Image (cartoon, rainbow, N blue to C red; front, side):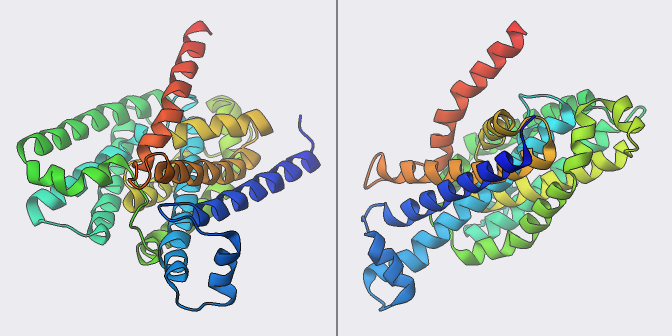
Length: 330
């Protein structure tokens, strides 16, 4: 059992790491900018080209990457606790598939072309998909983790198939949104983030408030009930929280995979099984991962950029294979 002081120190250390990553994110890119220039852009703003790059492009991008990473990681931790399945991530509720289909539909039917419109339809699609999965999961005698997983996997497969069909038969739609579908924080500004910030903020606050209840759920239905938890309400609130977090994150950055899968395992390695600590650690480590991945996405093929979703997949796919092998052996 980790002591409270060691957990607090670990969290502060992770916070320092996040600050270093944010500073590196502002410094590195197609044009490298010095640390003092970064400080000067805020302390002594002169309207130079570097100042404009820092304040209008790189700082918003770094903040968006951090918040999206934190939201996806916390959503993944909640889903893993809710389903008691270490291979789960927010995609298990069909959130990413619902968001993708909604955006593809908005381009195909309405001719949408702005990131703001994509965000609106993505959030709506994610919410509708989660509601459908929740409805299917409660059929036939109440919700269970297995029914939730099966319903989510089935709906995600259906929605993904519909999305693929539209993209195959309409190349214009594919050209319009292929970069969004790969997952990216490039070109996003604070105005877009501010549109979903209330949802992400409420989602994070709800998540941290549910830490004790989710810990009880991971011990099993009977144990949680014996501890006085109203498990049906806890599951419902948890799903609402995941929709707010993952839906908002996908709306801003597109479907970015593996953050919600990998980070909860890293958090559990450091803090154990108590979700009162897993969730805050997941938030800060998720932010570190996505900011770091975005830095790599900018410099690996400089001056071109790689979608950050590809960088997280390079980290997450081997980790997923490792987890699957361990689960088979176990």
